[in-house]
Image: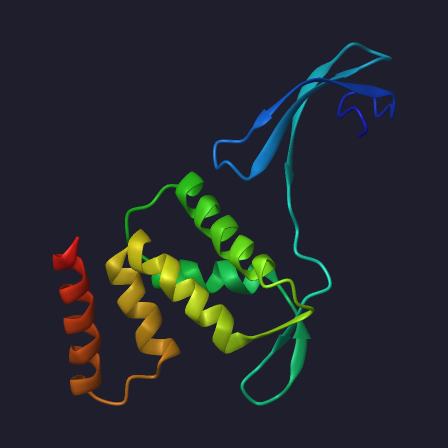
Length: 154
């Protein structure tokens, strides 16, 4: 890690602790050349994962697409940046738990819906309406009724 002040690569880790989201590591570092102290944040990144689309096309996993879809569903909904990052990490952790080189976009959608259901019910319905392509009001009402029924069981 290069020092942001003098650009020296001779730095050392002084302290490490879990990040606020529980899935990242915040490291306190010090430059051995100029003595400047700074922090870094390490996150797990999904590499070498292929997403198989519904039309059979394959493409590399892109966290940005996941974040974009979540932000669209959460538009004008109350959430913090930290909670959003934690949501993304939890979804990615579930993707990684599959221990496969390929995953279908359908499987990713199901994982996202499972997490959105407890994160924000309105965002869940928004995401589900696009993901499941509700054809009519009756299908939408069924999903709402299922969600409400599940909420009463808690």
